[in-house]
Length: 319
Length: 212
Image 1 (cartoon, rainbow over the protein chains, first blue to last red):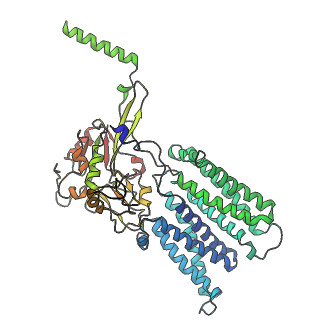
Image 2 (image 1 turned 90 degrees about the vertical axis):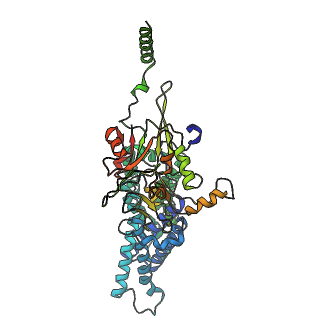
Image 3 (image 1 turned 180 degrees about the horizontal axis):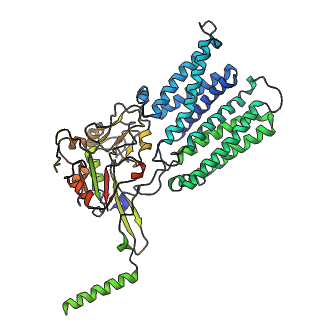
């Protein structure tokens, strides 16, 4: 009876089915956007990049709302900051949007009582940058806290996601390079992108190697990245388009930095999608060491001997 | 069947379920009893029996394992909830979801190592567009787009009855009781028999014991 009825109830490795494109897009937009805002403050970039960062965060938030089963209750999401990284993230996002908007507002609305150069304006900018940094960090911790999925439950994942956020931010700078007053040839932002791509590639390699060595479900996740249907997305999308091609373009074709930026962004999005899709659960422990199956594993010869012994016993009893 | 709980004043109850793997025959009666009692949506099984084939012909055999929410002492699904919709009752260890507070973020579904949580995205019934009279009544117990899970039949438990799955099991493979009471049937079974807790190494302190 159970054979036909519970075809789906098996004890093998199983991927999480809850999160896919929407969460990947949210991770991508919020990570890259906030990374860009941090770079905007640190590198003193034009105001265009702050607006781009704010826009991508707001868009990311809207995408996250689509992921929710009951989006009208999203405001409740900040009520458990003591235990939930998601809740902390909602608080950081709200603070970031508020302080970020207030810090860039003087550049757009000149009659405001404060300006970007004043103490208050600078403080607002740095508070926004700090919130942006936390938004870059928290998705990694949020995923890494899940002990149910060993591929995520590692310190490597937050590190890789932070690096991808920096790479995405640098890709956005390359896309907006028309707004930067720089000379011909390899300029500092191209070098920054090249360094980040290399660091990213190394981190992804180390992360996957560590997970492969961890064995069990984590190893299965790595296998799934290299098996259909995700192998093309990972190998071509993440590795070739997301890492190798932009590195070549940035280093040797300075005129194609916009294309390099697009490739980096595509790779960044696809990496997050791949990581989410190969989240393999710890399988249920169906057979434990304590269970004694030894009598079921008797060989034919053992059984023949046992049956012969039983037959002899019965014959003896009759005699 | 009525529960016999030694509810001495001031003592908290820690509900546990013992699953006798030697008695379970994989009949899925618990699965169906849960469906009938709680009216869960299509494709959602708060309790179910998984199976695994072991060995090779001619010495092959199937292991059955009823799975459900473990109502863990340290439930990983509760702290990840951003709204506090997932909670553990103060006077016992039953883990519940307040569906009026749940935003449907799926964080608890992913956090649960036992795959015991579900978020149905619609309220369609088993038979096409229209729900049956039974489904019309039963589907009012939950909301589409929010998390749901085994409640250990608290509506029965709180009036002294066993959960439907345990009441239904034809081989008496399932036993519920208070783990804090050393004299309860479940405590005695756990003391006497070899047993394991599912994936105890993950630190959730599950309160389901599999007797082997």
